[in-house]
Image (tube, rainbow, N blue to C red):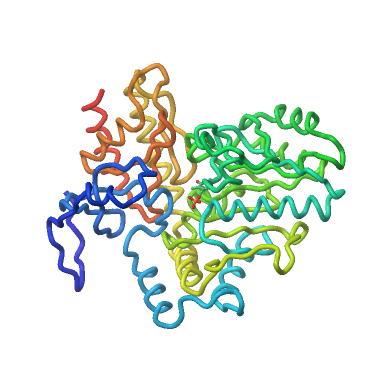
Length: 422
Ligand SMILES: *Cc1c(COP(=O)(O)O)cnc(C)c1O
């Protein structure tokens, strides 16, 4: 049993009143929530309102990069909120410049646009691709963006249309036009789609938006060979390659960016989730060669404000100075080795283990009733938080600071949960 860490200046009640019925009376029921309410966190641990402790292998869905209550993040937000938190982009914001410079210096990109979420970052990328197509590329009238089936790009109308999963689009027609879908990791499908959709300057494929590793779609890493060919096809056909790194970016893959795992550079890259360690932020990065936005083309009131930029800088500098990428690689390997042993022990339940760094998944057999949700619930009862990635994949996305002992503890808890449901 790991001891609860010391807390300064904070009185912790073992049991806080929380009324779910009252919550549901006024909060829009858009989420299927698990029946616990989290009250406090420290490192990779969370405590609910009943005082129960959990090991957190969800990290706010791959977002709390430095875990909970990290001293570097506490210091950055405390100092910045006292100094200045928001002024709008009517003025120059020094922290925004510093963050953009850090991102440019630590990626293959040249320019950064800031917003507040992954969907918004992808929305900006979609607009940039269209603007580029209309103004630079042969003035294409009806530009098309190819995306992958089983992808996830967000919930706004454009990004839910980009998302290659009908379940997210159902009930929201009419959807924006200008998107087409291909199976992931299938290069022939891309070649065929580009040929089939080519109507010259009237309409053609001008962008391919894709995740280096599909997160929500089941923790599915991209094939190196596929991505190399994708880059070649984009170069030969004047197509912009957009990588949605909202989930896999900012160190989660074991590299700072997912594209480094593939050895292929995109033209545009989007980031959000882990970028400010849980403070809401989104960013769209691009190369100078396709930076087609002009003043007035795109904007966000909150985008890149002093508060979020100082938070993101603290997260990125901590990743840099504390050798966190090395931890991600080592802990990821440790986790996969142990998950593979579980998959081998229970061949009637699991098919395979997949992932990079600290984004990993174990897939359940399609021919059994057990779902990822069943296992998430069983693990939760034992004190481990996990997230489903679709109905058949159990996802492990702990804070990037997770320790050797915590990885072992998580797998031990998971083994107990599996033994109960098996
Ligand atoms: C979570 C996610 C998004 C959407 O991000 P939001 O911040 O929820 O809008 C987009 N793309 C990918 C790959 C994601 O994982």
